[in-house]
Each structure stands twice: as structure tokens, then as C-alpha cells.
Length: 154
Image (spheres, helix red, strand yellow):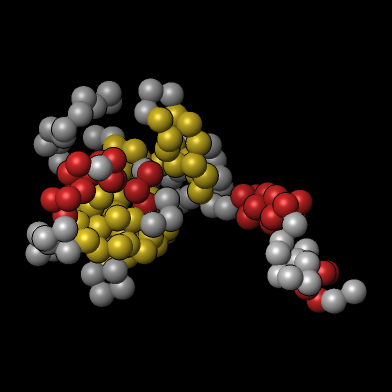
């Protein structure tokens, strides 16, 4: 038996559906964050493990959209999933970054790491397993500027 066969791949390099399912299950079990349905909100991110105040939740790489291209997103579903970026640009966060829901009482915050082209998400409070992780879409956790949609927890 070859090394590839031991790892679930065929001689052609294809991974069996069962091996892929097992690998996905293992990754989900080791995940720190999970995407789940949130009543009244669609999808959201919850903690899989406890987080302490100040602890790193995720460093999400971003795809920076050039200034001239950003208005094109206004006619797509991505319009609601981007972050403001300097110089009139916006960024799409990878990982869980574009799936955190908004709250005016967030338990997490984010900051931009421009050099690394990442958004860094940190816990503002202790967060229990199963608890939804929310951020303030205005950037500053205390900013209560109205958003483009009705906010439930205002």
C-alpha cells in the first residue's frame, strides 16, 4: 500500500468521498469557531471553545478591492460583507471574518493590520462555548451610528 493510499488518496491523487468527509469532521472538531444558523440573522459565528477577554479569535486574511472596483460590489451580495479599507478601498475578509454579525453590545472587536492585509479579531469579554461572537460594524465597539439595516439589540 502506498503512502497516498494510506492517506485516503487513490493512485490518481483523488481523495475518496469518505476520506474527505472524515477530514472535514476532524477539522470541525478542532475548530475554535463555528458558523451556524442564528435565529433572525441567517448565519453567524459562535465559539467552539471558551475565549478569555483580550484573546485572539482569528486573523482573517483579506482581499483588498481597488478603489475603482469597490462601487461594482454595490450591485452584488458582497456589498454587505466588506470592510472599509484605507484610500477608498474595501476588503473582503476570508475565514470567518465576513460572517460575524453586528451588535451595539459586541463581545469582540476587530482592527486592521494593513501590512499583513488582515483583520484581527479579539474578544472584548469572556466568551463561552456556543455563544455567538459579534462585532460592531462601525469599527469602534462603542459607536452607535445607525447602520443600513434595523438592529435588533440597539
